[in-house]
Amino acid sequence: MLETSTLFIVPTPIGNLEDITHRALRILSEVDLIAAEDTRHSQKLLQHYNISTRLISLHDHNESQRAVQLISKLKLGENIALISDAGTPLISDPGYGLVSQCREAGVEVIPLPGPCAAITALSAAGLATDKFQFEGFLPVKAVARQNALGKLIKQPNTCVFYESPRRVLDTVKLIAQVLGNDRRIVLAKELTKTFETFYSNTAEACITWLEADINHQRGEFVLMVAGDKSDQTEVSAEALKLLTLLMKVLPLKKAAAITAEQFGLKKNHLYQIGLDL
Ligand code: SAM
Image (cartoon, rainbow, N blue to C red; front, side, top):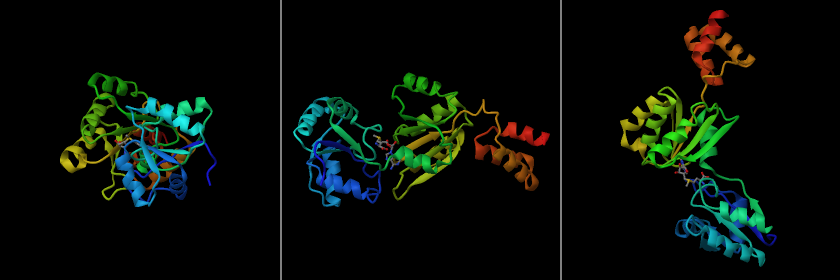
């Protein structure tokens, strides 16, 4: 049985209903109340798992007032779970106000690990993940979008965006304009669903791909942009080793390109090193 007076942060599937942990299902069954972004949407998930816990809405428009109500329930000893429509609450989803107020009020907050579109996409994109920057949704207004991207021109780490099907093409066009046509982008679409797709190419080629078939623009997207490599001149021993090996079996241009891709380096710089070798 649950300890009393805890707010549980419970991630839910981002498409495939099997992506929910045993612990998440147990917590959702045992709590007194589930605060959900859209109660009708979440009811379907609960029905699927025969969970009959009562739902209450908590979304962007009622969060501050709802947080006060939920905290008084928590203080009376109730346990509450917070879920969003999909993925991890608070990650481009409501819940920040509730969690920060719970912390201030001394209410215990326990997070459960689980699905998150950004992490799922990053784990299979083939872009550097040692450090990354999560940007969430770009602003909607043109100037604000351009400014937000402008700040990322020299960002050396992979940047991760959420994007709607309505704006994905415009966003990729803007990335090409601000960060350059040859900046590598990975589009991760419909993750965990039947038509899951990863498309990885330059910004310019991504525009062509999106325009080639209207279906390519449909669905939910995580858009990842490789970091800026213009300042990256340090070549590790591993990179040199790979370059040397590849040079034995491939033309230098190809060997430099593969090594550059693998280690996130500039291919011209590696080509020069290859010539020196
Ligand atoms: N809290 C969620 C999470 O942990 O990923 C994100 C919520 S945010 C409102 C919704 C956005 O997440 C979508 O517009 C899309 O960019 C991304 N997303 C959610 N599910 C996805 C999926 N199955 N495939 C690709 N992107 C997805």
